Length: 185
Image (tube, rainbow, N blue to C red; front, top):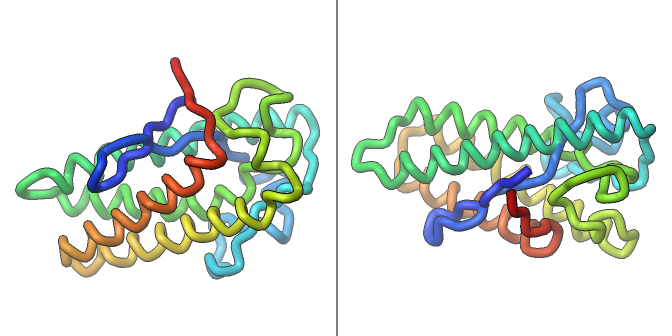
């Protein structure tokens, strides 16, 4: 469950954690954002919803897979942006995938999906009541940056894409610095 976060300028760490199935209790909560049309500004992580053990393991698996995919997309984007002739189709695909997964991330952290269930890169601090607002804010910032980066890729302005990519990477780092454990595989 390793995701190394890659910033445009520093090329370090990617994303990590795990996500939930579309039919899970946590993803059906009105506080969560999925692949629907809700505004990213309304995003909140549903940290209070507690799920069954079966749902928890499914959510943790989906969270892991989602973050792994985001991490792979970051690596591909970094590689393309370092290339003298970036493959813009690949950039657009990765940006769209990250944007979609960012919306799903609101359902990836219900109570009961932390280290008490199994191996995860998510620190227990995510679920502390005093961190709920901060974590939700960091998630919302990620979702907004992912949507902005994705929108920028449709315009063909490489410098604008790189700037939005750097912004997006910064939102990942902000969350990972506080809420992600170092993972060694």
